[in-house]
Length: 168
Ligand SMILES: O=P(O)(O)OC[C@H]1O[C@H](OP(=O)(O)OP(=O)(O)O)[C@H](O)[C@@H]1O
Ligand SMILES: O=c1cc[nH]c(=O)[nH]1
Image (cartoon, rainbow, N blue to C red; front, side, top):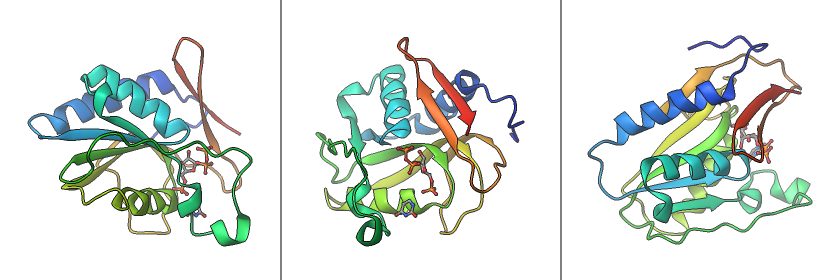
């Protein structure tokens, strides 16, 4: 679905993503969910709770795995990666809020492989803004939106856990 950038309903998008993921993962064994810090981790946490998989939910901070790490160094805040399930042979749903160039996905896959050899990695994103620089595609995506270069899609989580998505 192509979205109007002025009318982004993050809660409706989340509901769509949840339904798609639920259908797509039906019958898949050894599923684990991993979110990319920070927006992807919030979505992963909520998907895991809604799918009864909270015990197999992890978080990745890809800062050390970015392809521009040598040039840019670390951001002010780096959250620890936390993977407590066995990655080897798991069917992993990697979750991010926004899919853009694909470089964050590449970094996350590299990091995951340092934990073991998964059976499969699938990718879920709340929104896809196109403009890929790497051959990356999401298995599950709730909507597509065109955003001018230089602007960012920003996901926020309120105290009640609800999501909002804005262009800044
Ligand atoms: O496909 P890409 O071009 O890599 O872009 C997607 C990533 O960019 C944003 O993260 P950002 O690096 O802005 O960090 P944040 O999640 O902490 O805002 C977004 O949350 C994705 O993780
Ligand atoms: O590795 C990465 C991840 C996100 N963005 C980049 O430019 N590089």
